[in-house]
Image (tube, rainbow, N blue to C red; front, side):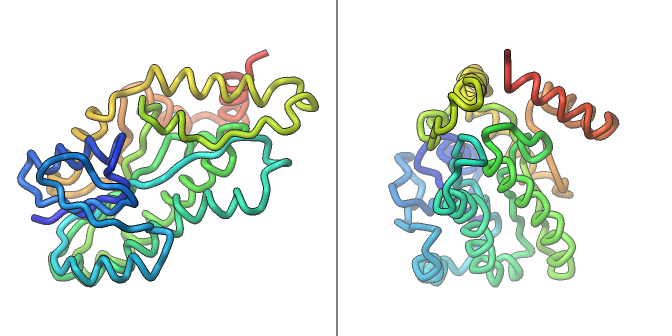
Length: 257
């Protein structure tokens, strides 16, 4: 079995690549930098470049599992986020995953394979001052549902792994801007501090990797798999509580006084 994973050079992607390798997959990593795990086949690729993606997939004739993992986050007030930063957020977190999936589909149709998209609880709980990351993950889950319906006729299963806070280099890599923080009464910096604290106290990447392997092996891939007990509870509550109440709770959590 062949698994292709984007962004496997570090963090969740690296842990997932290692776990898949242990479970008998031939693992191919698509990233600008190599995956450091022995046995993983690294193919240098900037997945935001459609030409590079097309070239790489011409070299991968067989695919049983595609994991759209690569992503990054930006934070700051929506009011002061530049158009360039908005586009960069969606370019990697959403559009690159779409193009990767398009290029993988011929092989996935032949194998009746699976696509697992890495999502976030931020898709359910729009986080203040992390609006565009939240929006990109919400869009990813919407696409996951649409792809699942479109590709069912070809025997290709599509699902999302919805994550809570995970302790990785994602925190340090976040592109932050505090522009307008004085105007917002320090709420931007306080909110980002809450995000970073929660992430550094979050789940280990290995926990996510185990959940991914379990999902990949299930007879029927769930549409959405939420990882982490407390996040399962939060997401369940979001289904029954009024939307306004959920929004107020999130606001209280992420904009402390």
